[in-house]
Amino acid sequence: MMETLEIGEVAERTGLSHRALRFYEARGLVKPLRVAGERRVYGPAELARLNAVVALKRAGFSLAEIGRTLAGRHADLSGLVAAQIADLNRKLDELTASRGLLVTVQSRIDRGEPIDVATLCSLIRTGERHVEPENWKAVTDRYFTPQEKAEWREKFADVTEDFDQEAYGAQWKALSARIEAAMPMDPASVEAQGFVDEWFALLKPFSRIATPAMWNGTVRMYQNMDKWPAKADPGFSAEVWLFIQSATQARRAAGGTIEGPPWMTGSVA
Image (cartoon, rainbow, N blue to C red; front, side, top):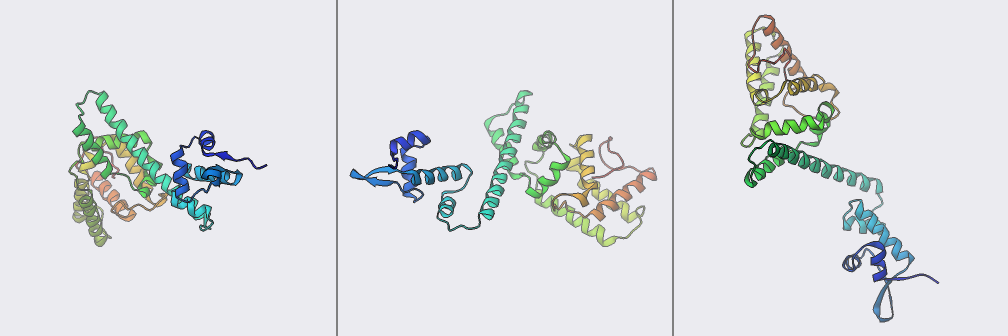
């Protein structure tokens, strides 16, 4: 004889509440059998379907996606799974960024900084505005550890509250376009050296707070632009980067200096 379970027994075995079971029924995800007195009971087929619903929900699928999948109207399981993985990766990135922000705030509290609720909310809003795009994350993950990236966020937290990232990026693109339009040119020429001055002036928001390790790590990253695992736009091309390197080296060879912290080496970022 086919074993059937009443709704109370199903709730006890699965850990689901009566309300959840009735909700799944209302959404058409499970259809318990009805016996005398309109009592709901679950046979092997209904229990198997309920287990499938729970498994797919645990994997992060929406109820609508679960319904289409179990109804057989979503034949592209590969595409469905790939989309779910991408969504989970996005959520994981958001959680990682949130955790990094909170770890940074905690470290500031541990150092005795007076962090109140208003300051915490301000730091959270700043962090949300600077969530790292997926393509840049693929690049920076290759050159910086999570601890180093947390240090980046901490360093920038105090200077980016009113920082216009969009305008700053537009300045880099404009400078890069003018350099490309003027190439080829002698790296030691007056024109080239003028570009060097503009380059390091634009770098001030970074160079004035970066540590030597941050600076050198960034230099390594840009030296390998052709090997980046994802397409990310820094605002200038690899050709412009190489030209600024050679122009900076020409200045140093002539005994000149660049504007920036004293620990800066001959490399540029």
